[in-house]
Every structure is written in structure tokens, then in C-alpha cells.
Image (cartoon, rainbow, N blue to C red; front, side, top):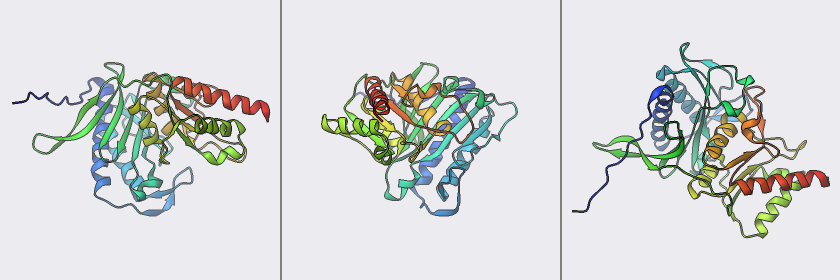
Length: 312
């Protein structure tokens, strides 16, 4: 009989581990909810002016409830509720999250995700992303996966939701110590409406197209960034063309957590001039440009953007 290796169940210890366990439980519930329900627009918008789907609101509530149950989360903020929601007076952490990134493409059955950052208790407006102590990126597609920064090993690991034993759903480690190489051949250009106003961004996209880079773009930040982690290379960008086209993505709920994971995996993040993790938080609805991925590719984008400014 062929030997088999037992599945390694993802386990996280300590106070921070309890927060992660809450996130993992929420993502497991969301995966089941998405697979067997439909989505409909409701007559509300969030604080960013986005039309909400019923699933935006439902997944948001699932996550808040799971975080509260940990007893370790002082407060939470989300893209759907971009204000401090107190959860437990004795909690030591604040969690900011996008409950359903890519919900605008959910009707096409494209892959969508959830994004999380774990911060120490305190005033977020006095912090930068360097204060983040943990982050996660979940993906709901043909499989349900999650990337987490494991504080015990100081690595970015991937877990996959699988049925084990008597049809019980558990998170099983599917890849350890994910690393992003210094250069890459994949590019995912977001917010391309800005290229008519931003010469540097336009020149950069033309460079990728003319030099054999491979386009990988779904319209969702979560899946496009996840692709970089799984392939171990590439670059994702969402660059503005002010004043006509403003930054699109949210610092607290999308950009800071994914930048944290990227830099922990050996990649680089930037807003065009500095690491996204060095941006000072100034309010709960703050947006920013973001370029993440392979270090040399991110630095290349920075050079194009700076050259473009000097020629305008």
C-alpha cells in the first residue's frame, strides 16, 4: 500500500493566534455562504459611495461576530463600516478588513476574497502599516485558500479549506514559506483609466506589453495579488492620474494588509514614492495608489512614474 502523509492542520497559538482563529472561522463560513447563495444589490451604499450587495453586508456581519467571539479584538473597522466598532473592552487588537473584495465581479462568478490587517490597540491615526502585527488574504474560487503571516515561524503560509474525517471542514496547510522573487514576468494593471492623464503609468504599461510580460488581470485586487504569491513573481498596480482619476483602493482595508503580506514574503510595496507601509494613516476612509510584487518590478514602476512627472 502506498504511504500517505497525514494532512497538517493549521494551528495558531497565543493571543494573536486566537484572532487568526476567528478570521479562519469567519472565512470558512463565508466560503459556504457564497457557494450556496445568490447576490443582489440593496438600496444602500457604504462610506465610499459603493453600491452594496446583500453579501457585502452579510459577510461583514459574519466577520464582526467571529472577531467579537475571540475576546481578543478591542475594535474592528471594515470597508462596509469604516468607523470604530468596539467589540471587547479587554481586547488587545484592532482588525481592519475588506469583507468581500471584488464583489462587483461576483455575478460573473469570478474569484473574490477577504482581506485583513491586525493592529495593536490604539489610535490608528497615529500609526503606519509598520505597526501591523498580522494579516491575511482569503480567496473564494474553485477552492478556498488563505494566506496568513504566521507569527510563530515569521513566514507567509497558505492553507486550503478541505473536508477531513467525517466531512468536517478544516484548514490544511498547503504551502509553507511563500516567497516572491526579485523579478517577474506577470503584470496586473488596475485603474487604467488614469493612463490618459499619467504619462509614467502609460509608458510603464506599454513597456510591459512590448517586452513579453504576461497579462493577468481579473478586475479584483484579491485574486490578482494572490496570483503573485502563488506564482512567486509579478507586479500588481493601481495608479491614479490626478486630478481627473483619483486613487481607488483603501489603505486600511486593502492596501496596507496586502503590502504587509507582500513585504513579509520578500516582495516590495510602493505608492509610487515610498513603501505603502510607511504611509501615515489619516482617517478611516483614506485611499492610496499601490504597486506590489517583485522588488525589481515595483522599483521599475516607480522609475516610470517619476520620469513621467518630470516630463509633464
